[in-house]
Length: 86
Picture (tube, one colour):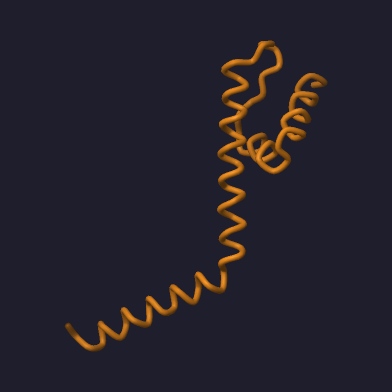
């Protein structure tokens, strides 16, 4: 193997580890937020599939999933109230 290639690979790995170390908190926050949005979307989909009242369905989109993901049950209730009022 060419020594320059080995050195370049070693430098790339070192820079990658440094980048992960520097941006670990923002990456962790973003991954948690993404997981919560997915769980919110699944909760909305489950509600729409098994809703006891067909007129109280909520559209599943990134905004509603993010609301439920960030706020949890209060966010879900907020969406139902807004849907009922509109």
